[in-house]
Image (cartoon, rainbow, N blue to C red):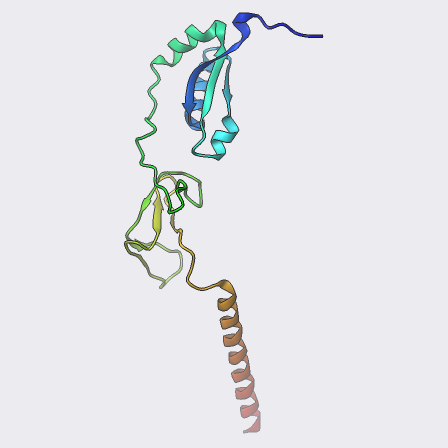
Length: 172
């Protein structure tokens, strides 16, 4: 059984090249006015900042939808500068995924007492304007295996010194 779609039921593109949050906002405005809308590529655009979605409505609702979103003021996509790393990929916050990050210089707040980290120019420190987190995109100069071996050796030496002190006290 084949279903024939009438011309007024076909989907037409109302807006193209939208980010996922902008498209979801426009779709919710349209649906609040009783106009069924579809955001094609919504999930892919939500996962990848460089990909865009299209807002689609039925051809019969096109004029009404155009009037409904004509007064909707959207923040321009170029309001926040997009920064790219050395490979050309867009920088995103490691905590929330936002692209609203900027380079940071100064004292980095930490939750550890007596630990002071100072971010200087060229060290790769960033501050996220969305969630407020600070992060460094550079890899550490040493691997975690060397740190583990260093701590293992330090704890083994401390244990041997403790055993030697206990045996020396017994000998006295």
